[in-house]
Length: 112
Image 1 (tube, one colour):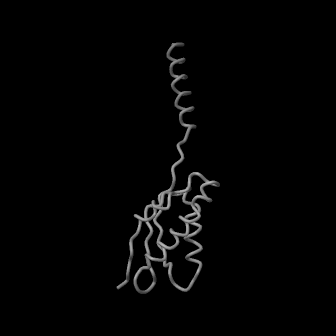
Image 2: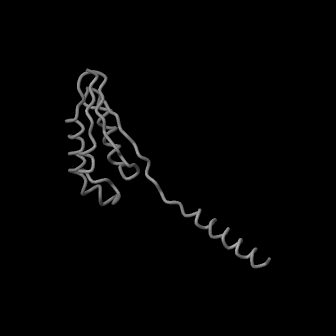
Image 3: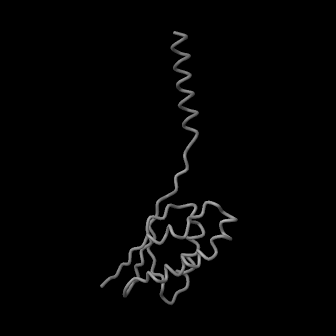
């Protein structure tokens, strides 16, 4: 009986210790933006997103304006600016996503 109690306790402790070591998982996100209009806040939001790319797994960037065609060019321009500063940013945060990572994540959406 003592042997059974000892083995059971050992198994329980092993499970409890293992449960304490969680693996961090980045949230998967899809970004929809109407970037490219007259409102600069969309450009600022895209800049903030790129600066925090170490915290998320960005699955896609969707250009979805309220009217007209999507503006893929403006998203690419923001990624180009990020790429220009990337070497400096990498000195501060080694976990940032590489600029080329975002180039394959586009969908252009139009209401037409």
